View: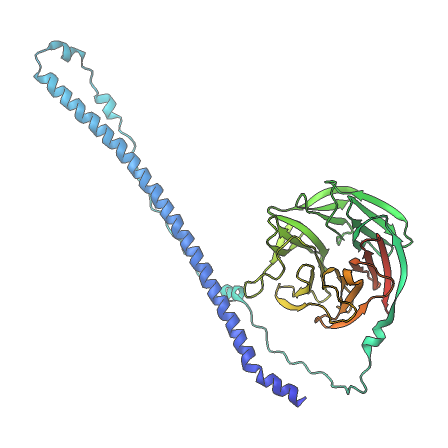
Length: 423
């Protein structure tokens, strides 16, 4: 306890310095944004000035042309006046009426800048907030007397409950509609619904005829799926497929529905050089997660698979297969931690992960397909154990239902295995 308090004191200055540095960076960002706004408005003023000058020049040219015609007419009249030829006087037509129609007088007003009074309180609220100091105390329990809660929660050996044969030659994704039904998809245009006995209940075909990149069930129970070919997220409602989100310059990949009903979609640029996560409320974009605090990409920039899930603590967990990492950010998109695998003598294939899901204790499960196992982590990225029995072969898509049953897609067998791993 003394060592812990001494450590906290030693880190105190550094913590507060980091806090003030973050505030200074926010201030610099605000200055940059304000400069951008000012420069944009100055550019608008310059554009208006050019138009103003053009209008004045145009009307000045019209007046000067009339002046020139009047001068020419006066010269012609003087010539006739001095001439002895009567015919030129008879043929002359007066232009007084023509010159009497003067062009309208032009008065162009200068634009005005109307400054908006600065609302200090609103300015402070927009800039950020400082959370109050919080002090938590917890009872210290001797490690000898502390109950082994982990042992009580995890089974010594996970148990295979059922195997559902889906008929997919390659199966990629599984999600639960409810406690009795699951949706599955693979590398065909069929999305299939099964009950827990393995009976096929319904088949939906994708609108484009291409296989879906991922599937999910919305908070209203409607099926959602991504179509990378058409850059679209579709919603199937009452048997009718309707467009929910259409992207420009990006292709949707994997998706999940959050506990608040939002939709998280992983996507990559058409050029396959960037990846990001976008949060939607319905069809409205609410948040984009792409870079860390240093401006570096959080995720590998490519078109590779990036399964995503939300944890119960609202962390956003992404399995970056190409980077070989579980990348976890908080709900504001700030990086919390990365997990790059667990050293093992027997599991020596590269850490290329695919499916990812979480349970009610905020534990994270991710599929290490080539090593035929699943990594189980706590909410802070600490390795807890492998799930490597139940004859798993190339585990891919994962999902944990409300009863803590784990559903695992076996990529090359086309099966979904239902596994119990908790007591």
